[in-house]
Amino acid sequence: DGGITQSPKYLFRKEGQNVTLSCEQNLNHDAMYWYRQDPGQGLRLIYYSQIVNDFQKGDIAEGYSVSREKKESFPLTVTSAQKNPTAFYLCASSWDSSSGANVLTFGAGSRLTVL
Amino acid sequence: GESVGLHLPTLSVQEGDNSIINCAYSNSASDYFIWYKQESGKGPQFIIDIRSNMDKRQGQRVTVLLNKTVKHLSLQIAATQPGDSAVYFCAETSSGSARQLTFGSGTQLTVLP
Image (cartoon, rainbow over the protein chains, first blue to last red):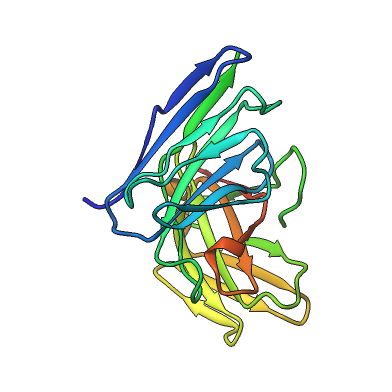
């Protein structure tokens, strides 16, 4: 079945540690995205990538980093510079995001808790 | 309707009744709208979309209505079932690009037995 796989589903981190969230898709989608979801708030875009080896900052990129070495993979690193990292992180993909309206397909999410 | 804040709007309906979930948007240039359903602990799932050249679109048990005059969007679910219990949120864009999607905060729908 085609889809997006995020791992781990739950992750605990001590303050000052970097953590990396995995996102893999087998939908052959060109574009991939990372969103952050906090209780009672809408999804906020962290980073997105329209093509391999290229990515752009979203609305809340500070304290995060990404890479896009393969079309299928778009890992997100939450660095120690992120002051409030506890949240639910969602990865998504779509066909080319720059042309025409298109629908995002989401993964199941990763819940990060800072201890 | 949806709002920004720590507490989600909630809607409770009896099983078998119809549900109406509302969404207000502020950008008059928005031309594409999507409704997503998110069950607890899961990622959002696409339900239905609508472009601004339409005012109504129907799917299986769901209907989306768009009123551009008052910048209002609604999702109607017919014969609500327990499996419909979830957070529903709308997203909109004016550029036609998924990169530019703006998401609402969501409405928690609870279906009562």
